[in-house]
Length: 304
Image (cartoon, rainbow, N blue to C red; front, side):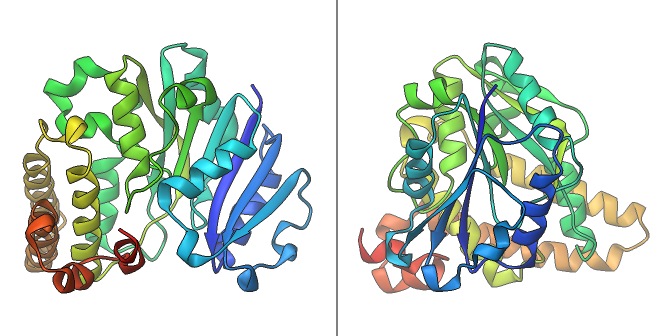
């Protein structure tokens, strides 16, 4: 299978350099690497030293959109498989691309995504959240899994994900105007159309963030706004029960680890996430000034 790697960047740093270094070492080489870079002044060609078949396309910050920018990258590619990374996702080994392609031997699979491992500096609650959301068992999710998995049936993450180009184009590509969550929207479309989305646990990237409470609230606000804007896919599936299950499971884990005092931090961070979720559910009824305070992406709302 032919492969194009597409990476949106903004102020790329050491993690991006590590990502490029790991792409050099892959047992399965990418045929083409496309960098969709926001703001040319932050770009250095030295990031790509030692790599062939790459090109960079610059855009302004105002022109960036999570779905549209990734979709423009797809239009520049001519390979069978489109692989997306975020700039801070570092492959854990040299077989990432090789293993990421394996699910596509099943013709039903339209997309596949990687397991995300916590970085060394990741705090215990976020570390457990990663293991909860990214278990060590692979599976292919289809429409029949909705009664069991609920909202997680549609989960997919462009931190590291691959798409079968033909199916991607059949779905019309990524939504061209979205605040966030273009990957999950695409996965939902594929599943509703009868395709499968593969979670490939043997495909591993290191990526995690120690977000503070306000960042968690803003992230959940934007995530929920993206779902509210796609009611045909998400209205019938609640995500609240999955959130409650995560909180209960994390609390039990903290007790088992002998750190029950961290439950207060868990409850506080969960409260901020829930506030973001509820605000996102009702964003159409909020004053614009409130929305600008709640979002991670104020530029998105300026042109809405």
